[in-house]
Length: 283
Image (cartoon, rainbow, N blue to C red):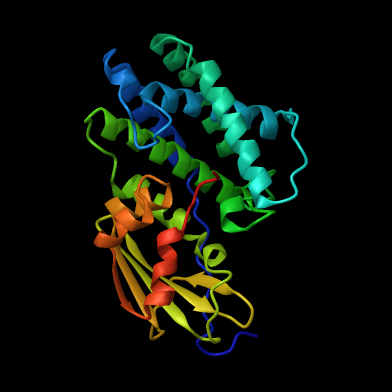
């Protein structure tokens, strides 16, 4: 039985219904790009716009092949998180190299087909059944489908946002999409803080400002940290950052030292600074 003031875990993020409207925006965006736009650099330093679009196609096709059709690529032995990162980075490089050879028209046509099947697949899943792949950046070897689908939303959102920034198109920092994306990103904070010692009952408040942001608390249990939306704790540290900085920081679009000037840390600086090294992507 829970004792008084025991923090409650965050609610599941149910977002399968958001994949289609987000993909529709992506296709509309790509169809409007000029030849020069496809060659513009993005926040992902190794990829131009064409490379990001190729990656979005590759990851949808890989997800359908592996998870829906149970057709898995040959993989090396994965004995550590570093092994997983190396393997995923290899698959990403190979996918971008292959699909990046295609013309924009062919890329968009294939993306339209892949997106339709990808969205239908995620909509068909029981959100509370085990996912085939755990959300590794959250420290989970086994996740539920709702978390894996939310992770997919973060991938589709932040790469589309990279293309929009690179081509000077209006962004999609709107609550419909970015609010659940940020909520998903912060679900990995207990894993990021796993080696950060603190007394049981210590709390850290995280405030992401803007229309799509919110407040979360990291709460120290006897052996681990947990994330909660409960707000009845006096925090040992409070971290505040704008939503435009948060999503870039958590996806390697901004280095910790670059983000630091935009982040306010009150209270214990050692506890607060850890968040600057949080990543919600693999690799």
